[in-house]
Image (cartoon, rainbow, N blue to C red; front, side):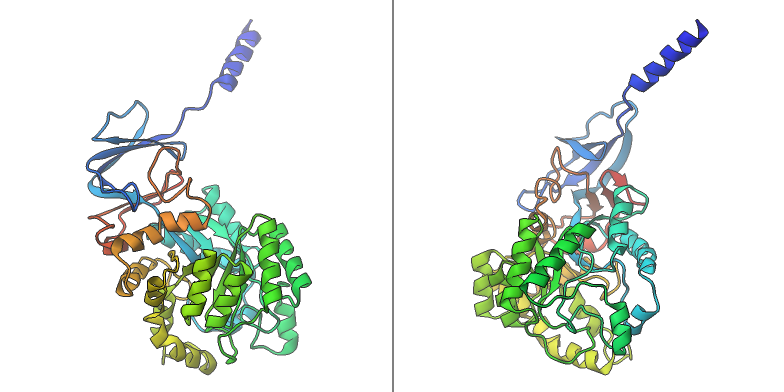
Amino acid sequence: MKVAALLALGAAFVCTPALADTTVIHAGALIVDADSPPRGQSTVTVTDGRITSVEDGFSDVPAGATVVDLKGKTLSPGLVDLHVHLTGDPGGDFWKEAVEPDEWGVVVGAKNARLTALAGFTTVREAGSGTESAFALRRGTEEGLISGPRIVAAGPALAIVGGHGDVSGFRPEVNEVLDGGFTCTGAVECAEKVRLASQNGSDVIKITATGGVLSQQGRGLEAHFNDAEMKSIADTAHSLGLEVMAHAHGARGIEAASRAGIDTIEHGTYIDEAAAREMKKNGTVLVPTLMAFQGIAERLGKGVYTPVVEAKVREVADTARVFMGKALQWGVPIAFGTDAGVFGHGRNAGEFALMVEQGMSHRQAFAAATTSAAKVLGMESEIGRIAPGYSADLIAVDGNPIENTATLENVGWVMVRGRVIE
């Protein structure tokens, strides 16, 4: 009888469902999304990582639930940064690529993931990293082993041989050893490398469509891939259900990338009216990364960059202060991204002030980092709003970020996927 009783008791434990993990948040004010007026006192209930209800006033707390008192704060959707490099910190020591293993990027990335989340960014798009490092971080934050945001990871960027994104600056034999295997020449090989990236776990394909500021060549910032190569990359990625983000500075490179079907243009420094017209026609989104330009300008004349890089930094400085405003006037869709890693992680929200300086309203800038960015990721039914069924990605600030995005530079409380970031 004792054995039977123990077996029955064991069966009861097996069959009884685990208690739901419920958190009840009492907020003094609530921002549902960028298009809705702020609400007053509200209660948001989160169960097992998802928002289950949003109610006016302070509702009763069910037995066993955790209560979060934010009665003096405004609760807002978590922010999205579409362009970060968690596995790197700012600096000009390009030679470290030859002495530091990719695994070190996971250590650096764990530090930066936490800083990014504490800054209010609950989802990020990792825009280029070592072969496995961003994927390891992605899994770590998803499983709650690392404090940080949800990570949409590109992995290694596709580049032309010797172009921005390829290893350069070393002896030829060292360049060859360090080559990650993601350069390509011709439409067929470029399609192959997209498939390889997909096989290895990329959530999005990153390419360097033009020259870049921080690479060790002084060959300008215009197109690298030719039209056939870029179209092959876009078509192959889309056939696999992946989108393509393109680092692009020069106007003709921007225009060609948009025409090829690339989904987002990163940076876009020398955009002109013809390139803007092509982007608008194709729905190509600009991710301006204004903080990147500020970050590199802060290091000018300090011996951080090589002479080649320093010259390119000075070349783009004036244009960086105005190009997003022009794109806005030309009707180009714009979403939020910073290029964190070029500047120190955790300063991501500094992008808002720069966007407003170039003509965006505070509401537009807030939307760029919430609903618009969520749409770029194809996650508009998952993040960017506070509504039942959405992931519990939430932040608390003082004041109203729709009226003044400066409030987002001082985030007081963060929840990612229902987990509070301490």
